[in-house]
Image 1 (tube, rainbow, N blue to C red):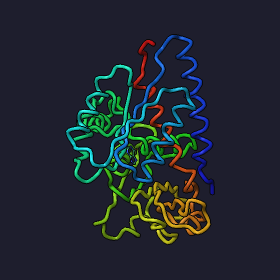
Image 2: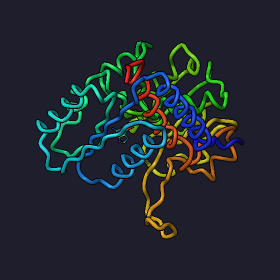
Image 3: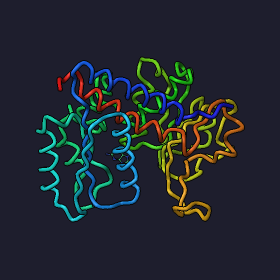
Length: 292
Ligand code: GUN
């Protein structure tokens, strides 16, 4: 059994991005600039956005964080999105989700210029992805594909079972892994809360991806001997042994599942660090060959 080391892979990819920024500078190309809009002060969102700003500093990007109180009206937020759309110094930006309930997330995502949508959430980018055209891929699915590639895990002809059909993980992953490409060519089963006979379906999986957001949901008796397990879960659960008072729990019962696997991602240190790298990669793509 091999534990997939997302920390190591992401560190290598980050170092390659840093080198690319140095190369760009020497050629007089534009320093990539990522902006983030953060509404309110949800603990998880604060942590993610702070990490994204730190990543930018480490690779030599410019970053801008724009904060709004959670009382902001949708029209004001749309105006802020429009400003970033029109700002030539900003190559790409994200609006951190979730947003307060009085704001319609779809309206905000659809207002983002698709050429600056480095989260890959805009319908134009999802549509391009589904057609196999060049687009910004959403961070978690793209990070998982890169881990699969790095560890030379065969996907062609294999049965991939995905649990969870969210717009940002399960659904795009199902599209990407069933494409005629490498990684890809999987036979994909996309399971969700209404799926019947989930355990029997999971037992047929060569590659099992848990992305439903329920701590330790996938137990050892749901895993076929030799399966590859990708754990996307990152739920904060209370913990008496950490300073913060919580720890991250994956969707997989690691201790039960690991002995049966050929490969498995840990939580933390598996998929998580890769998602941040994809945002940097997409921002680099957005900066393209623009001059300084
Ligand atoms: N909230 C949780 N994950 C993400 C992400 O990848 N992008 C944005 N914008 N918000 C998130």
